[in-house]
Length: 118
Length: 282
View 1 (cartoon, rainbow over the protein chains, first blue to last red):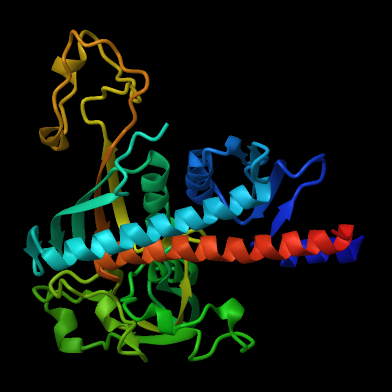
View 2 (view 1 turned 180 degrees about the vertical axis):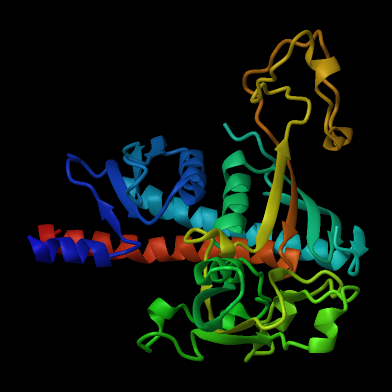
């Protein structure tokens, strides 16, 4: 027993698919060390996928650093694929925000003052 | 379902100053804007004093009091990527790869002539500029030379000698590692979406002022029915850094951190899926 607990402590940032699903269209993913920061945005982007019927997340207990993400899809895809697509899409969105921000910085059409603090 | 333009999120910078910036993020969901806000506050790594070895302290403040005050001093973290987290480092406690050493030694000598002259102020202010860093890129933020951060006030005969170990960390662990003093985040200044509920005595209009950001939005038409499908579109963000890094860098780093988290999840999910397949023999 002690060994199992030790392993759980060390395994940070892990993704597990919780048992209990009967088919590949439905799955609950348990994301260790993630919170509202990532999961709310992930839930939104997964839900934007037209093949996804249901996507939601919950933090079962505030003192445990883990989040459950539930995905249910249509017959055309699987929950795991929808999750991969969500992660990909959100990463692309971040890339887009970074480039939009850098372009805007380069354009320099804003009030700029290097000396004053506020 | 999708109410946003196909182009993706848009950024419009309003002002950029040494320690603060204002920008508008639009055409994206509230969850994404909030993720950016949360990462900027709690997950952008910076340097902060984490261990203090006190050799001599005859000041009026206790050792732990001074150690706590030292921890709160913002350190320049432009070059934080070069430094490793101590937990990832091969060393046992700390080393130059995962820490920066700062020393402080102030001793106020007793001058008999001065002591008898009541007109001379004998109080020595020990401030962040007395901290001597071993690394040029990690030192206390001292933009304002006239008002450095006060650590302790000393009188003649007192001494403070200590060594500080600054480490890399994130504000999720302790707020001293936060690169920002504040992130202002606003959407829907007219409260058309009714996400806010104002406490009022008679009317919202006379008792609550409308924020300056409202200039960019159309005022609500009182005869218009409530649009329950409406979603927030423009997010007015303003951030103020501690001076440890540039405000634009905080935003860019925050977005990169989001991407790193997503990339990590992809790898971990891939491990889980292939592991699962092997276990069940798919």
